[in-house]
Image 1: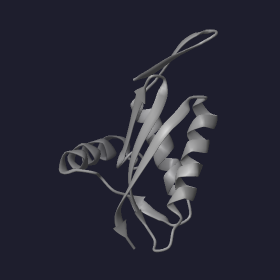
Image 2: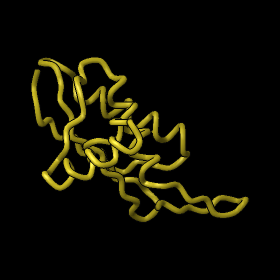
Image 3: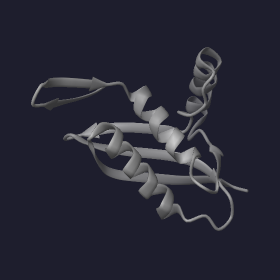
Image 4: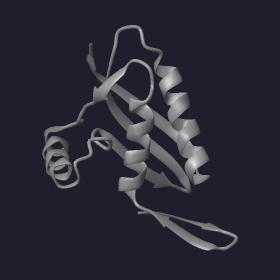
Amino acid sequence: MIKFENPNGYIEITNAYFATLVGRAAQSCFGVTGMVNGSAYESIVSAIKSKATGEKFNQGVSVKSVDGQLQIELHISVSYGVNITAIVDSIIYTVEEATDLKVNTVNVYVDALN
């Protein structure tokens, strides 16, 4: 749960919302062919969640809040020649526009090349 304060009070946003938001932004980028789990544990958790919800957008996405800024970790599969910086810029723009929170870092791990 990520909690921040604005002039009207406190707002709490779940990590699942951020993971889905980042996953959708990444998958909408040209050249991203899929999301990949970072570890075996994440694979098991993702399989259970996708069975329950039917969504695979948050697969391979981890979001943390440190001092009011977001740190995003993303595991993706891409096509050869894709500009990773363009993917990161798109994710930062999407998250900051949707939540009005500052993104501090985006760590992208390319786990597969298609």
